[in-house]
Length: 403
Ligand SMILES: [Zn+2]
Ligand SMILES: [Zn+2]
Image (cartoon, rainbow, N blue to C red):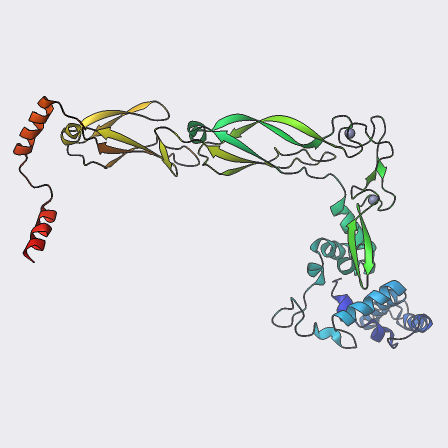
């Protein structure tokens, strides 16, 4: 049975009574119809059977003053009053489909209750989805399942400062954390050792109570047990009955390889412990990564700038360069331009997937001071190298002079 039946069905029409009919008139009409339509009197008559069900359903609602009031309110609210409301919702109802297709109110007023009410079936569940725990047993059941039971621990956030190498290669770090945790004295029950908590008499363990306002009932955390569903008579002396104490924990966490500065890493199940055996929350670690004196980082690639002499660039050489895992030989071809970047495969950040590369940029270092001997040799070199290294610039300069 769908919750929208409640809005669509005309219970007064089913019983053939006016909307202002009193309880006696409703009862009388029901008895008459129920006797006429009873399946025992109409064997094999499906139409009578259907009518009998309609009449019974209508009477179940209209004979209960509280539910009758809710039914009246709902039909007023959604403008579906009067006979022939089967066409669905009037235009402009929020959420109504483009074709005026009625949708299920259970979705509108909290999915859990609605789903529970539908799944449970039966007349008493019609109202569960719409009107909350107070209106129908089905709704109350659905809600109590959601509210009681073990609670998941809180998520905890902390920070960790890593060296450049640790961030690139991954590291296991101890983290000292101050966080609420399960009380060691009472193991989280909140009750003095040797005693045990009992089910809250106000909410019967559901942790929620419901408050009526017009047609609707709102559920709110139970005040008697503060939403826990359990009451402690003799509180634990360590945690004063809360079951939670502030604890310093040192946990060891593995920071995966390849994290970046400012990245927030989620470590499932490493947060605060759950209450009453519930699952632990998650730990979020915001990492700060220190700069490296030599290496830079571009995504999964490491960068390194290596000065070389003009002679090395012109003649070619083999450099020995550092990586985060030992040194490598890097061949610089003859005629390498200053600023050229050479790639050392697989020596970058080994995060997920293929490891990054080490990108080595060579820069020609120009000597600031020259010995007389060096100066003489370089002057000879200059005479020898009579080719213009910048023909386009020279042409532009000439062109500009003529204009
Ligand atoms: Zn309670
Ligand atoms: Zn305790």
